Image 1 (cartoon, rainbow, N blue to C red):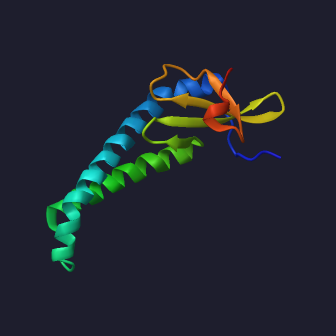
Image 2 (cartoon, helix red, strand yellow):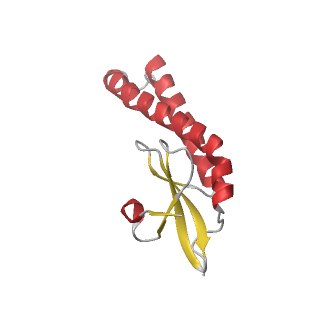
Image 3 (cartoon, one colour):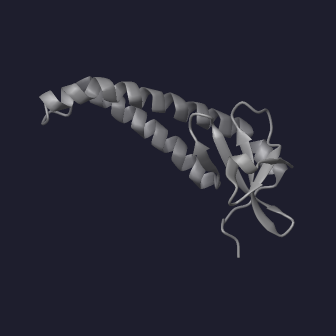
Length: 127
């Protein structure tokens, strides 16, 4: 029985890379704004618990919404984000009758690796 609803061929995964790359860059940028925003917003919220924190909280919430939208899109595509910092993505796939994950990282120009469901990134092998 399949663990995942959607499975990709290597060609399908590679065809999605322009969109996935753009989504990852947006997610990473939003994450960075969230970290900075929280550092600026936390003291404001402590001082003014009832007013919502002003522009600091608005920027923080906008970054949260952008990151959430990017993550939701990846989920709708059937893709797994494994590491935001590395931009590490897994695409469920079949290798013969074995369910595997095609493994891609943001600094790579194409999907060329796979690993089984248990081994993760350390178990990557050339497709």
